[in-house]
Length: 301
Image 1 (spheres, rainbow, N blue to C red):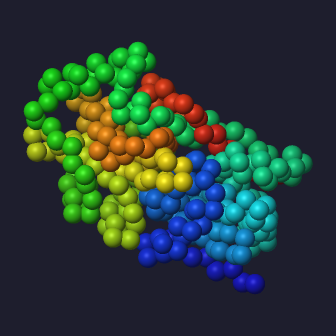
Image 2 (image 1 turned 30 degrees about the vertical axis):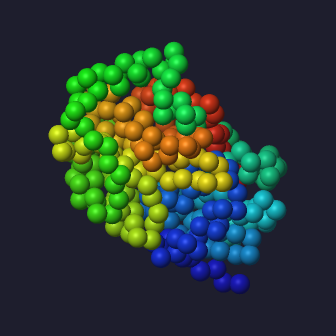
Image 3 (image 1 turned 90 degrees about the horizontal axis):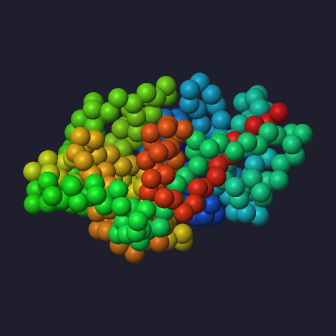
């Protein structure tokens, strides 16, 4: 059987959603919106067999894959189909990144054949929804101080708004401003690709489902978040969270307001990984996660 690689297209969103629903491993990579946000960065292509959907990705000059989107009982067969494609079509060994813990357990790969390593940089941070909405308790005392300072300064001047397709220009203008103020060292230029991914999703938001929100201060957009919701996991996945860093408490208020207004009853909040960046790790830990979702790299020997 000849395998034909397919592009990740907006019009295929509904068809592909079925494959993302086969398992619920709790990683941001297992959410369909994440795949569209990072489609350009990964130059994403895929092929589908009776065992599931297999990714062929390319970034930083390397071709690799993610765990196949497959039912538990078909995952092992799908993985070895993927291995066969890499070995005999691409003529290279298989590297799978950001694999979830359940998949690693199901595959139970031989250490003679594969090296399987935890990658702490890409563990997802999961929080209790109610704690993130209320910031109640001693652990959040500093957060509450920042929130109170924000309300004291901007209480009459700010407004939270649900944002979607028609707000695209305002969102992109804000993100351009945000990029200029944030001096982020990233050898892979992920900030630029993230901007392009957000733009792509907003341009096709009639087909690609997302949930957006922003905070306006004096009529100007100063914070923005983009998320998706997993009903099966009762989890909000926060894929994008940006705020003017010069406004004290704004990040915390944005996070809180977004959940209160868009996810008032969600049980868990996944705020993705820290990419191994020390400042981001400190920030995510300061919200006291209830779980870190492990991820692994699988490399064929």
